[in-house]
Length: 526
Picture (tube, helix red, strand yellow):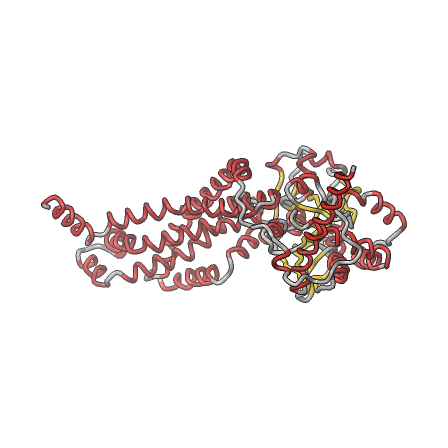
């Protein structure tokens, strides 16, 4: 009995020392860093350049408990949870649902601080969708790697009928444009968004999946969750929570809400309670807190992820290949138009090139996929992605060809014309063959850039290599492993291309061939 008691005392003492060290590090720098995705009202949203929302008010209570300021780091959802392992932040507050799978992957949750659920949004008057089972044969949009996606998967909706977007607003826009029949997401967020915009849409029914939201820390800092739980308890009692709840949800904070929160208070992670009063800051907090290295490569995740990564890499290659197959001839045509003797065609090609090169590719993808339906042009995700990549590449390739053609000595054209060739024949048989040799290196650079830029098509729900990697990183709890693997995959895709181009350059250089032959003869003679 004495041994058991001694073991319990030592365990408690160890937890207190560990907590003291980690909390000391936060208090020493005077701020607690919280990561979020500020596109999720009413929890967090940007207003006048500042993050505001329900989570912000709750976070201030946590900061007061620790005696430090709160600093927010805004990033896209796919990278939010992974930022805990890499040490980019101390906590995550982003409307995160407490799940066993996330606990198993190393995430530590506070007690539930908000009750939510998954609901269906449809176009007004669409009587085909009345209940969850009606989604099975429909096209559904979701925010990628959220519990909304998981709820739709559990319903049995086939993956080919799901469009996964980076943001919940993109899913709503897809429904409004008529590509998706419905979207599924968190009730408070969809309710807040529909209250401000998307008057064509409506929530049908109540939550068909109920969820508890929690504040998240990484497994090496469970003491932070103990402090968060303490701060939440105070906020429940002193009225801070009730005030924030009513302000940001627009709903009354009733006794029933209190009872529901109390009923699920143990659904978070089990963590040891902190002592009633934290000790003063240690003399050497860096020595007290011994964070684990974020550079932890996990072969088990890599082994399980390979099939998905290969599928993503395949789509990346297809998008790049089609982009080049369309972009190169279109780019060459634009270059020829800009140099054409037909004067009135030149401004058309010039305006196109300047507009495309002067606007971001991401914006071009958004316009093609989300804006064109407003004028009656409906294009699927894959077609939209290919068109955007092709047209963008064509503008840059046009300038490469134009510079290459202009670099050919003007005497070449004059000699060809003096031999009886017309303008078309001179370009085809004299100028362009020489141009191709000169533009090969910059064309290679454009191909490599296009391969990497293909990652942007993930915004229209295409699961290319980078998108697949972000989804795996979001749920694995080990972004280091996933992102290093993705980098290696991109390198493996680009190296063969650069090697092939070097061989072609060497074979096509009329000057280098005699030199190489002379070197081989000298070696034989020696």
